[in-house]
Image 1: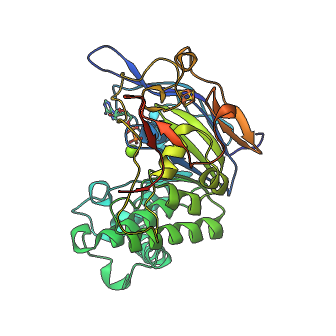
Image 2 (image 1 turned 180 degrees about the vertical axis):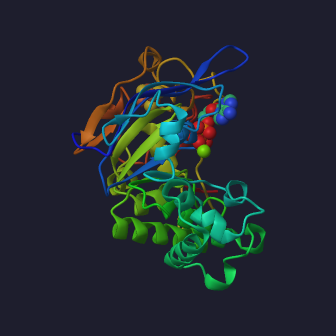
Length: 347
Ligand SMILES: Nc1ncnc2c1ncn2[C@@H]1O[C@H](COP(=O)(O)OP(=O)(O)O)[C@@H](O)[C@H]1O
Ligand code: SF4
Ligand SMILES: [Mg+2]
């Protein structure tokens, strides 16, 4: 896509392991235009955070990164630390999962929130304090004026997340990366914080890359989703369409495993058989092969290419065209070959 604010090509991140370097991210491509919203979804251990950290230039020291990350035309891979620091917090900001670890426990709130302004714009303390209040009001922190000197431990989890969002917004970034921003919160607060992020995105024209393992939250919050598995994108498309008509067996499993409101009592939730493999233990070929009920020998021959399954909707599965259209079919358990369903069923 031309004119993308963020354009990523063949992004790879490798990490050291007992067996030598192994790829945690294996060739991600993505484009995100100004003001648009994109979600990365997948179970824990699929490489979502490594992707986000690579975009921010915040990977662990031992990680190796390859490929291209262009932000507003500028290549970020290989950019020196000083240049990356000038972008981070000013034009690209990030919200993390656990605000308590990201916020300095000793700093009063106004200092935390205004830090990007002091670093990037050189604001004096008085102006910074006034800006902090404006930002905390914008994220609807209750009694913001009385809390400017509070410390993070004096706030609830949801309030801390508002402080982190206010800090991310301080310099008016063009891109916000939010990695599981609501995972530590209860369901009501999750909705409130996502609604807040949605409003801020719509008001400011920021682009949003939202990372989550929660398909429902994701589909309601972003225009497009990319489903990650094994360090690669296995399906991508419009959020509502991926949720309503998932194509890849992994996405079908994720959709089938969602808790449903109004499901009859005693209904058992389906799960995806098996577990996400540890780093370096991905099967050859299709990363989902060991957990997929439709696996065939050919699936293990190489990483499947993306196949179009609809308008701007594709899946990385060699058998996708042969699979039944809906979710409601028996999927053989890959470990036993015996039939099991991928949908909630009565126990
Ligand atoms: N600092 C690290 N050193 C080595 N391996 C790591 C490190 N951080 C994450 N990993 C591994 O990299 C893989 C991808 O992790 P991550 O990107 O955090 O996944 P996700 O965010 O999708 O849960 C996982 O197998 C994880 O165990
Ligand atoms: S390529 Fe094969 S193993 Fe992979 S998801 Fe498709 S059917 Fe399953
Ligand atoms: Mg993560």
